[in-house]
Length: 507
Image (cartoon, rainbow, N blue to C red; front, top):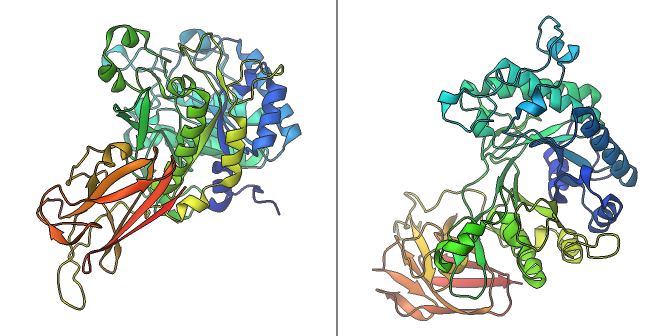
């Protein structure tokens, strides 16, 4: 049986198979290079196409939209029937998209309501002006909004889509006490999918670290854009990634308790490049303005090709090392907005050719990384828990209390998202792994010589390094960290009772 087989149920191992072969394929259903896109999908081994269809603000009539997304789904599934296509239901509604649509009888019936002859009511579906949200924000606590979300979800299921991205879910659930409204919608769509979906199962994510009610997760996995920290001492627009919390746990929709659900990172889009920032802000100010004055995918698309390839490599390694439950949604196709790339093209992974003359030529790098996978780098990764320190734990031989806080500090810190020589940093705080030992793994994006030491209890009063045989005080006497290759995975392990420091590296 294939790793990706499922029918009616999707165990975590199968879900992770798809997430480990995932890409953002935003609006691929509308692509004018679909044949070449499918070639890239097959070459790279992609099995999950995120954001493949959806409507933020409609540019096609309703029926034309669904005819097109179904035709694209049929064509992609003819090439590889195993692929999961994801549709989007977002945190934005527009009057011109909602009001022309008749409410089908089956929507009333699903909600136990008498059938009426009417169209969807836009004003009944959004937050009132006094709520302080943006004008087009749906309010999922309202029955009309629940009906609209259900209607859209059913249309996508009928078109061959088996996954849903539910957008910024914590925004439109602002009035949804106990998540009853969104919970009802997801439950109804799961029930519909159990009967009508291609493989009798639909899965859901949203921009959330956790959406758990009474111990049960409403989502199958959590998803978030990546978080960055700018690097100012190198030419160009350099960024490093920073972990911002774990994926929450709970009983999954499969009925299995998980300490942490799977987590999916992405290069998000929300407006392209901020041209005003480039005209009016200093280099340093722009560095802290979103991703150097833009959204994530626009920043990425504006880097030179070699730098884009390196950043893909870095992102996969960073994900594997920093989140054992995490996966990366490779950019296959993504809108750039005001992307400052010379024209209005979207980002496409495709190699530039006659079949895709505006491709960004990332498919070879992506194929190598996707086929290599995560396991090699997870072997040196951080533990899954975010608890630190040997809390009230003593050395069994001597009775000495282990420190609750041990921090790696030195000149390497800015390249992992911290401040240089910060002996009290939470970003480079080490994990207690038992037996009096502490560990921290990170990815160094740039080759070079750096220094490092360890501070116990987060102070400079009792430091240890590979260059000094006994504890010392202050910022001197640090050991050397020689990085021979960009994007090297580093793991440092420290034995508190012996002061032994072990360093492992994997390029």
